[in-house]
Length: 377
Ligand SMILES: Cc1cc2nc3c(=O)[nH]c(=O)nc-3n(C[C@H](O)[C@H](O)[C@H](O)COP(=O)(O)O)c2cc1C
Image (cartoon, rainbow, N blue to C red):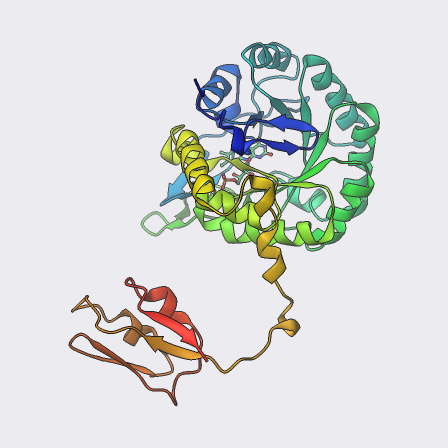
């Protein structure tokens, strides 16, 4: 009998860990203790990352989470369990059969190495260094500081025998340099991205921001930022990459893998859609893979990077929009409204393209609900 998440085709080797599938649960309140983590393991996750463990527990402000649609702002600061308490939690998770990546954060390379050594003793299979959080003091101090991230990574890598992954911020202005520094320092993998600095909104009736300080933006809206960061890291480093940000479907996971990720992490979708999101992604991924030209996930990794060019490399081909009439949606006018070149008109079920006016921008292809348009030379 195949257990959920045990589908052979989905196996990946990620930073020396043999995972039954590439779907990892990200650091966050959904991994705040062993009993929450057991739910993720039951749902079939390939591995889990603990909520970030520090030597000093921070108070939980209230409220600290606010959602709009499938995205969220949070001002939660890491684990509310002390380092010592994680000994029992990690033991329980290991005993339950889970693969544990301990997320840790400290102020100095030596303190980071100390916590790393402790969680290794507790039984963690790997470590994720959190150097990227956009609230508290995190972002200004660390996220773009190549030297400091190099020193922290090196110090941790030298003090433990388990694989070390470094989690990067989308705010790092020099992401490829940081990726290279992390690789040089001995890390086995990079994960990206942590949340994006945000204010989700302002309540115009009270005149107050929805949460009282800047926080981390996560969920659906940040996926394009995550994809770009992962693509840049794949192009500039040779170590494994774990894609994070806005993953809620198997297609999202595949997008990250086609841009070079070996595994992916899921966070916000667990809060906004529940743990069922994991078996759904796994089942859909296995079905898609079975019906695809690929025999396993390694075959498709990095596929999209081959057509990812620099702006200068793009050939300017005089393509224009073509439409497949008739349009079955009598009242839809999306293509006409969006064409700011005035190249599209519609009469009853017939759409016309004015060849001279069309500049081939391509927006009609995205807005047409019936996918009636294509760009052709
Ligand atoms: C409420 C909340 C708490 C989080 N706590 C942590 C944390 O303790 N450590 C960490 O490295 N990342 C933390 N994150 C960031 C997530 O691990 C992940 O990088 C981010 O949310 C993007 O992925 P997502 O869009 O799937 O949520 C947190 C995110 C949220 C929403």
